[in-house]
Image 1 (cartoon, rainbow, N blue to C red):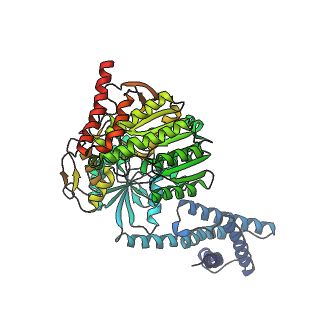
Image 2: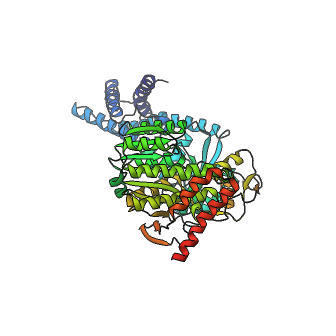
Image 3: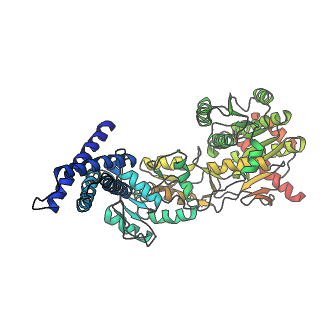
Length: 605
């Protein structure tokens, strides 16, 4: 029904109700047909009709979506009817007519019943239609009966999505055993398993956006015991800013279950560091590089240069940034290989950036074990090219992305990243540019991380492959990692290795089990198999070796490791000879170099 037809229908219905209710009330009040004169009845009806439409317009009774009517709509009907009756009585007094209070009082009740009933019949029809649809929708339980939970329930009840809410769970005893929007609040979290079983729940939504990580972890642990798919309501700030709608219920991600609060950094120092500066990001199309670009763009640099080797990934982040920034920042794209020294020097000389974030690298451990010469070419020579170009072109701050695998490396990838750290530390001693490195743990959701692999394996019905039951890793989210990079640049004095306090390491097998439960399966349905430790992998990772003790902190969650030195001639010799060596010899030299250097330092210390 169109808007015009809808309004016209309501006006006609209300007019009929106003006219007929007066006469109905007269028959009720005067059963012997001793009624007021017809002239007086017409006057009462006319004044009521006029005043009703005036107040119906004032309270927008013809503009409301009555299929979603609730208490506020009932209050609107009460106000409009009451004020229309009072106005009709005043008009009759003004023109000197007798006021029939009994008729007006009874008419008021009749109006409330008939006008309210005509409106709420739309809601009754909608709810009846809704109850019929529950048979084909996923039966959903909402954890949290606060404002957020009610918002989700209302949205789901009146949407055409695949979820239908049946009940709430809430630890607030004042809400328990009550009904909200027609849905019962069954009890606290201790009632979760029984509720899922009794109501045959197929989906759980956690609708408490204010939860911290530890509280969310505890609630999720209870949800995981039910083996039911669990999702989360978006954050309130995302709803308010329009990034997402209430209907965009998201799956619980492993990042929600780190068991610690995400690191929040000093935005003031970062703003001073980046705002109105020319910033260049290498590897800008990768998981970390693209997120660094998003974070940097929030601080309004004068120009942001996206440098990468893959045209598709650079195009994607360019389009995303241009769409979100509305052309407020100049975005420049450069397709280049960091091993092309002449091209890198040319780009650096053309744009003269104040800040360089170097995220381009080969990061996949098993692949680099099989291709050590490519790891050297990209991670060592590429870093050397970008860093030296930055130094020669008076870049103020150069931030290199490193890894915890560079600590006591057992892999080619880790060894080449350690050598890259040494290169920027040495350049820091020779150049006016401030060179620093930032070490990450495993980044949840990044390309090459275990999360996409596990999700893909689950979608195929398993099994999930884990290398070893005791393997542990430090984890952080992509936004955390990117903020750390920005903070490192803002606090850099030169030569530091910045490390994030990532809490306790997590067992990979526990992560796999959590993902299985998150997806609504049990370990009986999705098998976990062990493939054995791959070449170059460790059972556990470290963030600093014993010679790189925590020197000082620049933030409650960020500390600085003491830089270590290495004779530059060793790196020069490696770069001059690596292309002539077979792969196994090359791997041996890399691991000997990076681990032997710490032994030499141990003697010096």
